[in-house]
Length: 385
Image 1: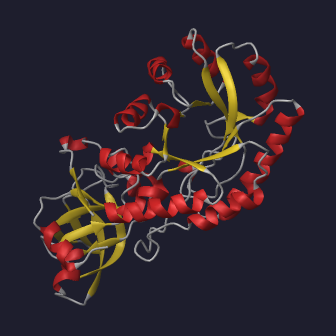
Image 2 (image 1 turned 135 degrees about the vertical axis):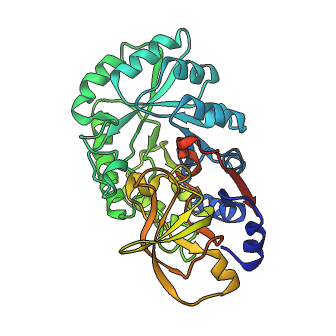
Image 3 (image 1 turned 60 degrees about the vertical axis):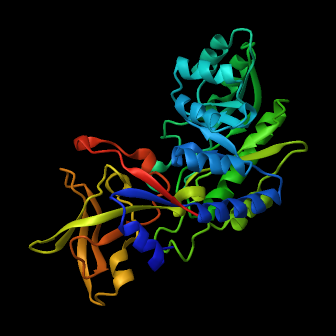
């Protein structure tokens, strides 16, 4: 991803900043469009992964929809040119103001997570009709980090299977609600394809329940969560969309006339983004040495929050080839928290003050989760084709 000419340009810019390779993003989107198009699937981009205007607009231009989990994400989608009938609004805690805004926009669908939510939407709709899909908790283990697992009964998301009878009975009395489908999402950074097979089996069973109750469903939304290779971002820059979609083509039983929807975020944008930083100090410790960067958990919180791995590269050593010696470092930021650490015992070429560092696969849940803790400045985004 980083050649000498690019490194030379980046080295002249004030750090830290997010660096987005729009050329890689375009290749990723083209692959996604090709593989999903084989089966006529509809894909919505999950803005929670990255709501940067340039990124969101580039994805919209490729013809994908928008999956939003807040009122402001719905606004961002509208501002970036998404048609209202391409916008889906999910989320377990939609406020009245957010619901009213989405109703005013006449969005395609609300993915509803509780009976009370549907009662509120119906009440706010007035004379309008709100199209809804029931987010059902399939109780399928995504085999991912516990903080980003969303499809188990212990999670806060969705309607449990044992609630369906009551929910459907009450929905029949809500005159401003139109049920158009069902929705599922089992988690994020899913790399075990067997989890998706299990999801398909559960969706098939749930569909049978709706058929037995003579409730037609036009849309089936199976969520997203496809994971990335954080260890080899260059080797596996574009996710294996072909295998992902084939799982659903092989195991999901689609009824005549039904449309299948996906909501993918990380898989689209993760690899195209890096957090670029410079070394402030190299500090000798008792049992390790610390590389102290000018970027911190305020720019990329995932390692502190999830103990996640990101590949770290010393771009100055790639460019200058000053040293072939690899040393073991803890790579940390300047924030006054011991959790402000990007990686422990990372093997890097001998590193010095002023070296340019890239923290890879930061295009998803990097910029969008940034904060100004310690009164840090909000950092800029830089783009390259």
